[in-house]
Length: 203
Image (cartoon, rainbow, N blue to C red; front, top):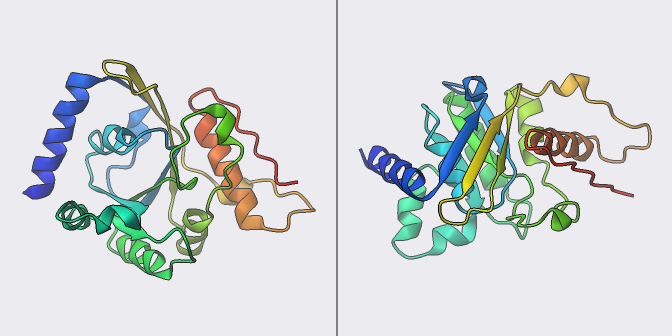
């Protein structure tokens, strides 16, 4: 009941304050297990994706949010999986594996922080956790691109892509970290959906 109320509330907020356009949302999974991977511009990235999904999405979010009195407990009840970004947090890996076992949806922003400008986009190395778990459990990864200024009454474009085939991802012979290269490829696919050239160079 609580989740339904929260979803209705944010659906109304999105309708009033933004002009959301959904593209290819028929590609979005109706059930899990699946991992939704997206870029992260604004707090409302979560809302515009989540409210359109028929299945509940369990989001990975920074631990600091769950430390906020009252709000933190509410966030946890919403299925949010907190991650400590200062260390290799195995607890969030365990939580994700449990959600996958229950055939639920997981939402994650591999860049781990809001990227407000394109100039900042290629300076943030994405985290490899989502790709690692997807390959380990053979869980499909669905790329979703979100594009907006998120000013009041502005247009928000949400584009869903095809599931990513990790076996088809080209890996360079000089690759020191195959998981990272595959994660960078995933983010490239995400940004391509909204017409942005993601060109992170490791060397």
